Length: 532
Image (cartoon, helix red, strand yellow):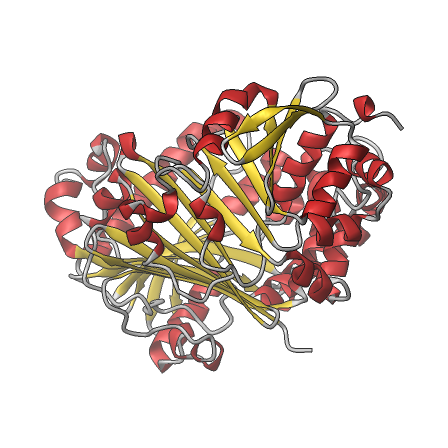
């Protein structure tokens, strides 16, 4: 096989491989940062891919993802590289990417000049030069540089490193190699050292990106604990500083009146933000205004959530669990609930007027009682089902009203009553064993927000929909799962849902906790695997 057939596929394939293998174990103090120029805007380093590949070779989740990934068949370029090198894919990974791989880029953004470094032995470096028929073009700094037969790829080699880039980035390639290990390096850059110092010292991979013109710096560090992954973040930006100026005084582990069955939740320690245009709200609230009469009576946090109601809770059992999405706002003054009721009632009225052209039944708005609690229910699902022909929308009913110290809006009325029960009994999500065992910091310094996802619950919820589709739309479902026929949005959803369920069955919990220190936002994302 001629090298000309592999180029520029070689560069594309190696870049694709590097991009797809970001998570790797035990970085060794960002060794490749000594090769990067001090003004580099992007630096990514990850080490020991050989051990990562070996550890996950027989991992059940990795096997599942490989089997169901759109790239479960290796790209043609990767097969061509294997053939040219006379090596298997695993051998290439271990030999040429198994130690340290790093990306250095001049600017943030797509298609910006960049160079990839990877540690290789002199013997393996010579093998690349021979197998790909590289033509030597001269010495740049301490690197001997080469060009591919078609002139579309650049390589550089010293006694430890192989560097490569596309020929369109030749100028930056020569600049980086010319100063690598001798000129001012990123490793000694004060900005880089300060930001990397905010990340855990024991880390498995690291990313550093900055855009000084926009006052932005973002850093990430990856840690692996057995099969669990933790991603640490530290960064700042003008938008981030603006967000921090609107923080409230709430603790982040406050999920309001949500019940322990909640699937996912995000609690943000933010004061209610004035909409940029409050004219519409003010018309609903007249003679009051949102700015003067409503916002001062609202508090932090703001909670967004996803819950569910099982099919058997409905008189006409739909055959699937009905999702309950919504938002809860902490009340500083409970009397504002009546004003919010009035505003939402007005929105329902306006929706009825606007949807008159659909020639559907109007949205029925009723007041319901539950254990001495009153709340409003609007039959939006019935109208949407008539409009779209999707009967699955029928059970959706917008429910809203006060629940203790909170104002709750949700798309499912039964879930509203679950929140009432949880609030009355004190058996709320944030006090549940499930959340307690997630290891979240209940009283962090400088709280910004916290979010949790319970993959097992979400998988069970989605499975009820999959079972429903099998019965209600058997032909479309069979085609979608097989990837046959026209992949409409509905078919695409049916195709991806079983794959997502299978993946989530391997996970126990996903949590995100964010704090701040001055103008710096810090975050910790944990992905915990289900115990074997």
